[in-house]
Image (tube, rainbow, N blue to C red):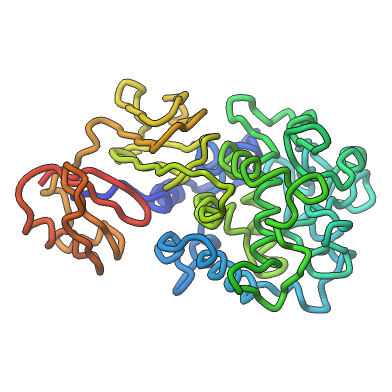
Length: 426
């Protein structure tokens, strides 16, 4: 057996060859998805922070085994334990001079990227921009409390653009604020990369909820009773619905703008936005909510990032990469359970509509058993093995996949781990 290379392994390989600092890249599209080729190349310098943050009880292979309120609780604990925002040294005013280190434009030193329109702004306070409360002050994020001066949530914005939003809830219907109605004003934002600020908005709202809210009795010392997402839906709240929130989040994977500021915000106040680092966690956290209708996603034959295990009917965008580092050709790809579009040059798969369980297969999805490392260490600590008829035949732990497989009859098997699903020929 041979596991598909993980996202982190791929990034590290890129990092090995990336000798020059990230500023050397010409015309970096700050809205390129982090998992795209362009995003990966520019993102390499930041990978170490992400990897070091999620460890022990908060490691990725632990997070992906949880869902619903339990996942909320783990993330809520991590955010509370690592955030320093409750300290008196942080304030609304202290944000002003820090954006130059947090929202920096990778193309020009001393410049920052404005929220909603991507405009390149001077990093100096008082030069035509102000601060946008993604979760409005009037709806619970007063600037005098931690949630109201949280670097992860309060963004630098062109003054005129900020005024046009007011305190409207995000959404697509009449009476809501849709970032897609704002003209992108940045010559480096490339149409092919499909950058949008819808996803940014959704991930900040999710962050505020998981840091300052409560679910299933889980809450930390930063708890704010006004940060209850499920009670803040509709025009009087912060988002039109969970359906629209997840749609925006999954159809617009995190961009370089978000990842750069995620690292900068961690430097500033200690914590990260987990939904930028691992977009798949958002739908798993909200999966048990009665208003979220989800379908299962499985994939094999190629690495898929983000690694969604579920989708809503609205679908998602993910990137496919084969073991040799190339993107599959469309002739190699088979998708069932939804309509889709695929760009083989970018490796970008767009599920435009899901109508049932979605399966994504590259080639026949099989790997040969003799390619497996002897100790099975290419697989996660936990794996479930199914036969070709879909019947579970084994549940392994501690990287014991190889030894278990050797005891099974010859045939085709499906191995599911927290990070991937693949077919294996025994």
